[in-house]
Amino acid sequence: MKPIAIAQHHYEDGPSHFATFLARAGLPYRIFLLDRGDAPPVNIHDFAGFCLLGGPMSANDDLPYLGPVMRLVLDAMAADVPVIGHCLGGQLMAKALGANVRKAENAEIGWSNLEINDLGTKWFGGRKQARLFQWHSESFAIPPDAQWIASSPYCANQAFQIGKHLAMQFHCEVSVEKVKAWLANDHQDLLSHAHSPAVQDPQILLATLEEAVSGSQSVADDIYGEWIKGLKL
Image 1 (cartoon, rainbow, N blue to C red):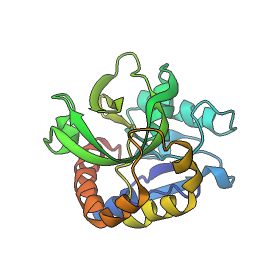
Image 2 (image 1 turned 90 degrees about the horizontal axis):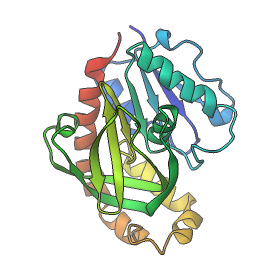
Image 3 (image 1 turned 90 degrees about the vertical axis):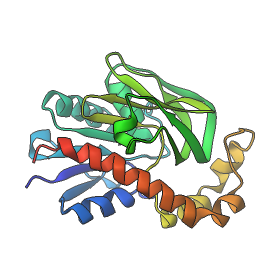
């Protein structure tokens, strides 16, 4: 069975619940620690799927591995290997497909209520609404030939699909531990975007974190369950 390739762009932004889901499903995976010097995969045909995680950098930054990662997105799509992108990962998918990534209408940090259109409900277990975690100040445009499927009150483009491929602006992979680490270590980012109406108070986030993450992971299980149907095992 081929593993799933996971591109990790930052040491604080690991696969978390995505890895938990894959382990539970008995699906092997390999993590590429790009900010720690790992080279991206050479041949996407060696993998059953391709997952891109988030990170504090911009999809527009001149980092040596971002170009190869975006080329791999196109290689995977051409080979019918499913791609899924979380936050920065979704932005890299959009940019690889010719869409712009720019400053978001509003920075989002915290929980966001998403509206899902009819095209997108298959990814969300039939849901028309979902509450998912955000941490971003940039967002993607919808690429040509992609289908826009989800929005939030403060950021219109929350997800798009192209066949079996899914790009997300949000972080459905979060765990309690991951959110706590971000809140503890990225306080300056919170302060710099405190003017945004979509940035929530960290103490309020912590007070309801376990319940909110539990609901988020239920949605994530449906998203990932739909995505793995397309794996090229």
